Every structure is written in structure tokens, then in C-alpha cells.
Length: 116
Image (cartoon, rainbow, N blue to C red; front, side, top):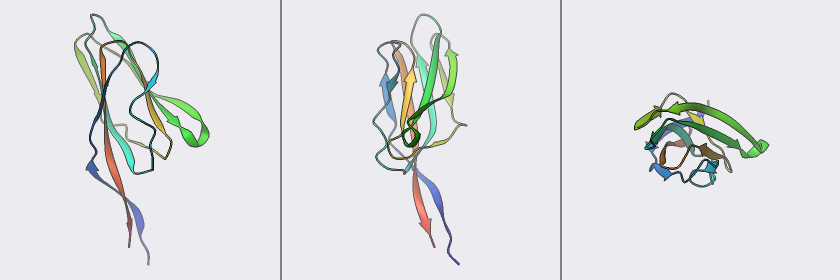
């Protein structure tokens, strides 16, 4: 009997980026393989007012962009989402919208293939 599956293992080095304006941008680079799952993300708002932040998943296989999360982040506040894991495939991207001085952090888990 053969058993195959995936094991979510080590935490990958976080990707952090400060946004410059309200333009939608890719955070980090396109996935170069299918070993990562977006395990959590955070938006930190350092602006003088609330900012509506959005996180998109670009599905490269279908060339489709999906709005995954949207919420206003209050002044001097941080919104952390850790209950929305998203498995990424080669070519997929995480894109975000915020405003200048909004900081975005993505935390990925490495996936290891198991075969027995």
C-alpha cells in the first residue's frame, strides 16, 4: 500500500513590504514551485486614518485574480489573519492594496511531499 500526501513543515522567512500608494502590487515574487502555503498575513496601518486593505490571490493556471480578504485597518492598528491558509502553485502571486505607509507581512509554511 502506498501513501502520499503533503506535510506542512518549517516556517519560511517572512516577506515584508511597505506600500507606497493605493496601487495593487505583488508582494514578493511569483511562486517558483508548489512548496508554499500562505499561512498568515498582517496589515499594519501607520496612517492618520483607517485604510481599506485587500489581499488578492493571482491564480496563474487560470490567469485569474481572486479577492481573498478585505477590511478597513484602523489608525495605528494591525490586522492579523491566520485562519485562511492558501496553497500556492507555480506562478501564483499574492497581491495587495492599501495605502502609503501600510506595512504588509506574509508568513508561508513549506510543504514537503510524503511518499511511503
